[in-house]
Image (cartoon, rainbow, N blue to C red; front, side):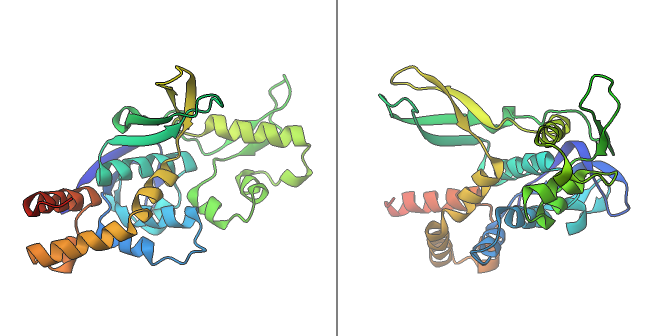
Length: 270
């Protein structure tokens, strides 16, 4: 059985009964999920791919069975948080990154080791609506809500996404540029979020710099970047262990890799 984990969200999502729930049960990704991802058309957006992975892996919301509709009510920040937890369940909590020093005179290649366990969701708890004001009086110019996964999937451009968050009929396209930027900032400040970068230091020139971090790109890169090794692993385990394909595809990538390394050690090959 793939590992499962109970995760508490800061803002929550709407369960099948229409209530706001904060606790979800998450199943680690397995070979079946990778096969599903490999079969997606090349034109599939990252939002669609990550949304599909979440709908496959979120098993329960509160005390109810999860649905595709319930995972689509996640705010974008909490979506990224669950993608990070999915990475931990599927690949482990240690992240080995390769970076280049941004200093023009250096450019050294660096190995950066990060513990994902220390990363936590930050921000205020989710509310149904928030006021946006541009002046000192505090009178709200309009009211907004936080964008969700469903909003991102339906939007064709950033203006459409922003417009779906406005609750009182105001047109985002008619707002001055400064007001639009202020609204975007207000949404960002109200949204639960993860750090978007890691602070590190070049071991060669001692220059500090920030290494960008994106949970969605991290997870998809780990799953899609190993198509050749995926096929090889399935072949090796099938030939040498005689396991049926269904059992091999039920392993997480980390567990599958563990057995392949054991097999390689026994056979004396890399």
